Amino acid sequence: MVTAEQVFLEFSVSKLRQYLSRIHACLDLLDDGQVWRRENEASNSIGNLCLHLAGNVRQWILHGVGGEPDVRRRDEEFAARGGWTKQQLAARLDETVRRACEVIESVPRDQLLRVIRPQNYEVTVLEAIYHVVEHFSGHTGQIIAATKAMTGADLGFYRHLSGASAPPPPPPGHEIP
Image (tube, rainbow, N blue to C red; front, side):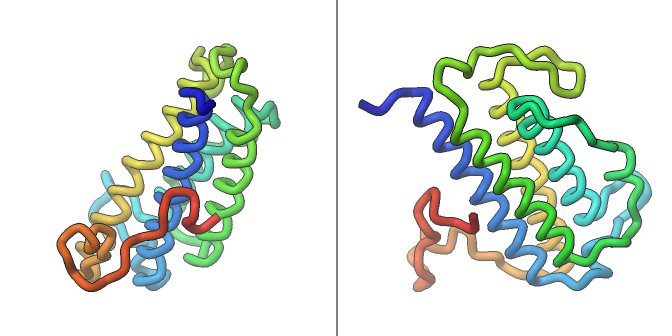
């Protein structure tokens, strides 16, 4: 019998992988200069957002849920003005999301209500996972919007819904690992 806990954990992993594949699609269309472009000093570049996502996932999942040391330097995620190629950013995100998905998949169902303290917030494991997925979603949307603004490209993520001839996206859980 499938439980709500199992569905939550599997869907969380599926969404993180889907968002990661969408970030890859964006990075594939951009050069390194575009990845680090800022519209103004109050805005973050796609590079900053990639570093920030990796830092957030490490802190909340690898540290908070998985018990690894907290090595995050959040201010540096936003201060960076380059120094990483788009391939390096993608590799960092890939590794972080891969490891986070392993942690999420290994969470015992009876531990979802265990209280943890990532980033000095007192939350349950379930809340930490939910936070990471919604946070990843929001910044993925920013990366998509910035990519569309710079390239004018239709990324085609929902083309299958309009009857266009493009094949549908892979089913949940079959995106980039």
